[in-house]
Length: 234
Image (cartoon, rainbow, N blue to C red; front, side, top):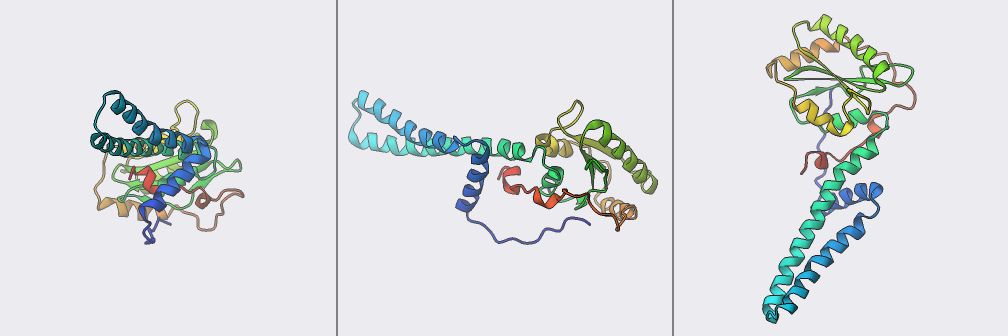
C-alpha cells in the first residue's frame, strides 16, 4: 500500500520550535544551557566593548539590541544543526527506521508502507518507485540483508525487466549507507524513467505483494517517527 498524505492541522512556529528543542535535548541534554549562554554572552560582550570605547548610551543600547538578535540567531542555528544529528542518532538501531525516513520523502515517489520482505531475524526490505526506477532498501546486517535484496531484485526484474533496479543497504557496516545519509543517497540517483511510467511500474509491482503475510513481532514501522520539517530543513 502506498503512502497517502492526510492533511494535518497547521502548527505555529513556536510549536515546531518546541518539538525541535525536545528532540534535540533527548540526545544533547546541555543544549538549553548552551543556547542561553550564547544569547547572554553576545550582548554582554558588546556592552563591555561599548563601555571600553566610551560610546554614548543611546548607541550602546542600539548595539545591544542588535547583539541580542544576533545571539538568538546563533543559538537557533546551533539548535537546528544539532537537531538533525539528534534525530538520526535516536533512529539508529530502531526497527523500521528506514520507513521513518521514507515517510518524509518528497512527492514523485511511490513508497510501500510495509516491508516487502523480511526474515526471522527481523531484517527488512522496503521498496519505492520513482524516476530513477525501482529502489530496494534493506535494514539489517549486510550478509543477511544482501540475500533479501537479491531475492527481491529477481522478483522485480520478472515483472519489470526494463526498469532499472537500485539496491541500498542501510547500516553501519562497510558498503552500507548510514541512516543519516539515506535521503541524500536516494536523491542522487539518476532519473531514468518518465513520470508517466512511475505509476505503471508501481502497479506491476503490486502483483508481487502477498497480502496474507504479517510483519514479524516487534516490528512496527509506524512507531519510528520523525519530524518531517526538520528533515527538509524547513
